[in-house]
Image (tube, rainbow, N blue to C red; front, side, top):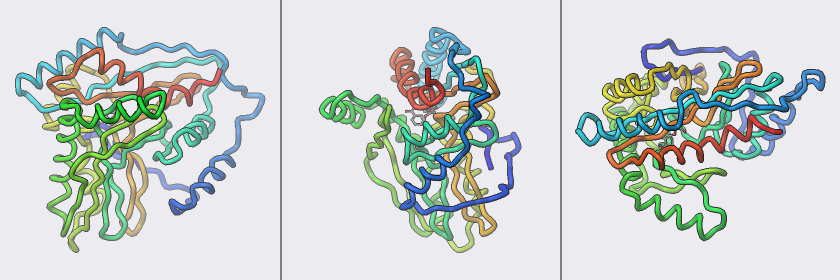
Length: 319
Ligand SMILES: C=C(O[C@H]1C=CC=C(C(=O)O)[C@@H]1O)C(=O)O
């Protein structure tokens, strides 16, 4: 099932013909499972040439970032997330299963998905529920990986101390805790953000765990309270939607939404749909966004979108 970015759009639901559940310890099987997904037939061939084009020029997008940062400085909102779309056209059909397998290789611990035309490897957990236990993994604040252990450590230390990134993260942490707390008997979260290190970038992360009250809202209702978090939208939510509408002006569809499963017992798991692309035959649209606060610098934000694209882009391109 998938929630689109827009709250008024209907949730998409698919009933799987077959399900297979694996424990986290069975990662090796998970890889084996993906390896068993049939490869495209030799006849259909793999793309050999790729044409890339951003839907909006980098200059245009930087202008929008500057505009959003000014709105935050004027006190209209605390944070807005602005996204970019990168279009790719190939000379043969792109096979989602091939892209997924490449993502699984580079991002083995991510939430991998290929559903409703969207393929990706998201590091962000919106909500997981088992019985009365719930969990969320909130990410905001980003820096690239260093080329060696020392520069990587220095970049991580810089991120932990960066006022701009701390503010991006604080807004998210508060929103997630405020949304869940009224439905819980206890709720815990790390005081200071941890570092989450991925192949291409590192993020500030807050892990939230909680026990729900006996008479708790359903998994879907809880997810709908959280969605969209300030990791993909901003805060206050209504004002952030307004700024996104004005500065982006395109429909995000399932990007910035949530995707996962819910079962008959009311348990489920939904990741945030980031680090992904929509695939249609020979065409793909990649999506990438950043949290914008008062001190955001457009050029640095542009570089950050390029670092984040280092997840989905290499999975689509294998010249
Ligand atoms: C919205 C995206 O990332 C979010 C998740 C982690 C870090 C983010 C950031 O530092 O801006 C974004 O809030 C995206 O990758 O498209």
